[in-house]
Amino acid sequence: NCKAVLEALLYIRTSFVRTPKYNVVGLKNDEWKSKKNYHRRRNYLPLFEMGFGLWFTFSVIVAVIMKAYLALPFLFLFQFGFLYTSLLSLFQTGASLDTRKAQS
Image: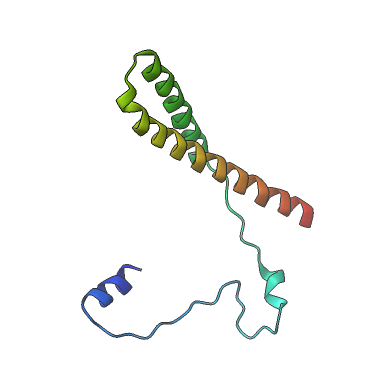
C-alpha cells in the first residue's frame, strides 16, 4: 500500500494487479465459496479495549459528580469508541468460532 501511495504522489504510472482471494484462479462460478476458510484468531486486545471502555464509563460518572461538564463530550467519545470496537471484535471472533464448530 505504501508503494502504491508513493507511486501516485510521484506520478509514476503502474498497472493495477488484483490479488486473487481464496485461491479462486481458474475456478468456475461459485466453487470459490467453499474455499473460504479464513478465521480470525482470538487475542486479548478486545478485553483491553473493554477495560478502557469501562474505565471511561467510570470517568463519565466521576465527571458528572464533579460537575466537569465540559469534559463529558470527550469522555463519551472515548467510551463509545472503546466499547464499540471491543464488542464488535468479540462478536466477530465468537461468530467465526461458531461457524467453525458448525462446519466440523
